[in-house]
Amino acid sequence: MFLSLIRKQITILFRSPTELLILLFMPIVLITILSFALGALWEGENEVSKVELAIVQQDDEMQQVDQFLLEAKDFINRTSDMEKYLQHMLPISILVEQMETNEEMKQFIHVTKLDPEKVEDAKESGEYAAILEVPKNFTYDFLSSIYLQGEKPTFNVYLNESEKITSTIVQSILDYYQQQYSLASSLAQSGVPTNIDSLPKMEITSDIRTIDSQQEITSSTYYTFSMTVMFILYIASTLASQAFVEKYFHIFDRVLLARIHPLTYLFSIMTATIIIAMVQVGILFTFAYFIFNISFAQWESFLIITLLLSIVVGGLAALLSSVNYRTNSGEASNVFSNAFVSVFALVGGSYFNISSLSPWLAELGMWTPNGAALNGYLKIYQNASMVEIMPNIIHLSILAILFIVLAVVLFPKRGGIV
Image (cartoon, rainbow, N blue to C red; front, top):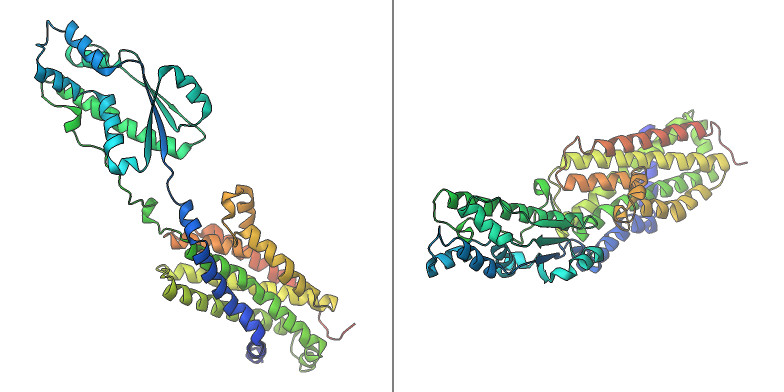
């Protein structure tokens, strides 16, 4: 009898073309429209903005080279070859040259040379991700540290704390060049003829990959998952409304007269909802696989999240049915589909990435069925492990248990219309 009740619920839905249109065709249309309409905007959000780097030099490097050769004439023979050799050892010149001539690096870093008197204004403006301030006599002290056993000089780097990512990029590049000219200094002190330009250079390429070879989240990927988890919620209100119609026409009374326990009828609604939800997700994911080439490599993890989400939706359908039966009205289903689904979609990130707006809302969204599932799908798509999606599994499990328990408690044990 339980299987017959499930089959009855599914058959009634399949006889409603309007409902099937909303549940299956509408999400496909929205996924397609949003993927193409917002694709350019979405890709634009993933572009790396240029890093603004300001360089302030207190002295002219070539003048300091001349000064060094003049004062070190007792130790170094001044020849044209020696002058060229020293000019190729100047770390700041090499750094600027690499950033201004390397085509790949020019795509990500823009170098601005500032006058010393403008450095304070530049710090206060926040215009630059980093400011490299080269103190007076830096070049002279650098050459002296190699040939005259002087102390190694240092330059000052001011990082913009409001631009953590870009300032970190600059810091990494400067650290690399510091290691580079330190190596050149050590080699020169050891009598090995070399220059900074001959050492291995940092290479920056435009082939950007995320950590652990994560898949890039495109607009089609995001909206496939976000629209799927949103429209699955409509199944709950649809089945709950359908169940109330059965009560209105005394079908529920006939079920009770056949000595079928009321909870058996309730769980048939929930089970039918789970089956329909699984089918809906399967159809939408198949569409996305063939049309947008979205990968479902970790299909076992996708299946776990989908099953849990379907159980949550089944619990929701049972809860809405219980409220409808308890109040002798279909308003609970209507309010849920017209209002609550939109609220869940907003907080859960179905319309846009809510975490970019508010971390607090993103955390709240994890306690909505669609938000927890969407976050889980995106993690799995980016090759997350089972441990990483465990919070999503726990949240969905808690919601499923909560909805089912409330549905059982509220469901009436007798029929009739008050």
